[in-house]
Image (cartoon, rainbow, N blue to C red; front, side):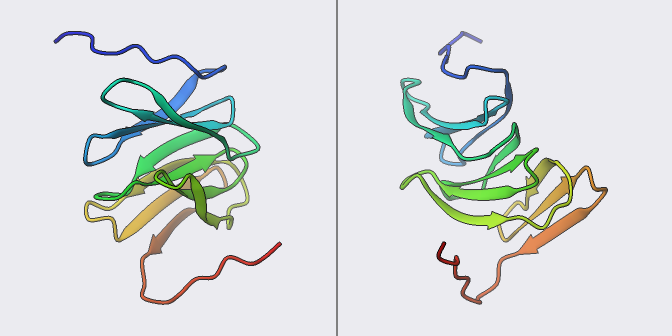
Length: 134
């Protein structure tokens, strides 16, 4: 094995990371509340996003997409499109910190665990979801 890249950019420790299934993107979540999207070829930062109000505890890509799920101590899981850098959906049904997220092998559902001792499962459906206007 040979060291390929050293990546620097977070102000506080990186708590989680994941690589997209096509191997092109690396997503890192940190105690500094930032999600960073990196290019795997040169290690360049594509985007740094302040998306949570507390530490990001888990980052997971959905298979065969550039959608990433982020879990946080702010009691939310967010879905981010890493191509457009937009928030796709917010899952905010937790009563305590969200510690981890796991995505199914084909990407049709994900599971999140929280300090409220809950295990929640979300499954993809054909129903349309609308993000409310603020």
